[in-house]
Length: 320
Length: 314
Image (cartoon, rainbow over all chains, first blue to last red):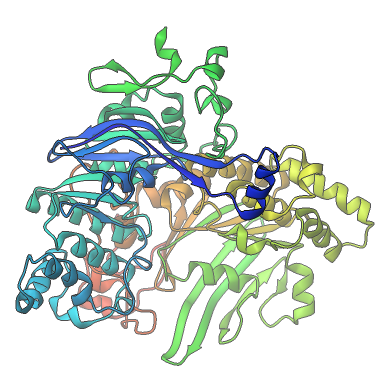
């Protein structure tokens, strides 16, 4: 349904006047380029829930924006139902954002927030908007009587529901959820996750579910994509990733995640922190932190290869 | 062992235009030297205000309306500010959620650390510098001497939190209060910080209050867990007991709403939302969301046997 083919996204900071002048005078001033997403390929089938995991700066949000056409790829192609997106947003693909405070216009009433897009797209006639919004609010578990209120009059969980109602308002087929439950309290997060599952059945939606929280991803997705510094390091069915993680980074990520089952455990952390994406290490991006590093890892970036059916990993260790 | 910290009947209120907000409503805690207590609750449960109240960091319109905080035999509530300042930072230290807010962006790390040493000890700048180098190396920061000359923005989030922890531990405090110190960090970095914290606390014999919304973090770290809801402690006990066999329906609900191997398919959820602290219902504050609530629950249950509930689970 959605296919990413060798997609890269680079952000280059423009040189300022002084740097341009220095360059004109012959100084070597490098441009700062961030490889936010580096040659990523994967696809999402109809009705599937794909979880995209990674830590901050790994490019997962940029990838989410590429997937719904908010960014145009620097290289490669994003195709939706076979047609290239070319960085133009489609009505069929909608996004649910992380911050339920920043992503809602504080000066608009809920009715306008949710009702604006379907009216503009001509999905509902103007006089039908209030009824349409009321129906959507009911579906996401909000009282339709609240549709004349402003965002500040709602709690975090309710605001998340408003964000979801807004995305659903234009009858999308595909939702990109970027850390959509990260800002919510535990008990509210469970409610919203359940809502996502119910809506998926009700509207036959497909999800790309971006999260740093492995527990959430394990719970909601069928397939998991793990990213590190702009590259995909592992793709596998959810159960498989957690039972048999292949890439050392995935293994570390799973081992580090705090779990209720652990009691007075001693934490044995992996070394170091994520390097800056401005200056990623050569070869395999993970090699400075990897416990299994070999000489080859410093030179050569491993390719994402299938190691068992449906399980892809990019690590030199798999070459035997 | 005598208690290091003894909080009894703590009530902290904020006088707002809308009325009096009672953020902490009769909290009692006790902590022995070297013990790790996990203080767990969702936003608005009063867990952070409890931490601030212990340190006397409540500014108007807030005030500690009742209760006592005894630390190493001294009463901290109502203690004159100049005496409090001698305890704060030296005997009790705090680590906050956002290290960018606790570190001064225009002073080098070294200046800030040396200042901290000199605030409580009459010693030379040279000794203070050496102490800072040692403290930074202890939290796993390489080339500490070089790093001391740098400014907060030159550190990553995890490194900044290490610096904040190093500053907190400079005077070998008897008690560290940590308010969500790993919430803003990545999973792998969180693991490192938890590891450091565990080592440092075990090494120095300091007691630790770890305030968090994340039960899973506390499960692996704390000796004892106290769960807060709407300003009150609703359940308290050993970490194993509270997490494996919770007795309060709220704790049960919280644990069940965490996605884990055990819970596939639909997550069980706690219906509704927490009541506004400005408008708490009489009796048990959880009763409107509780599957076990009945007429009895309109009277406030006592904290008995580690649980504040008329119908505890067994």
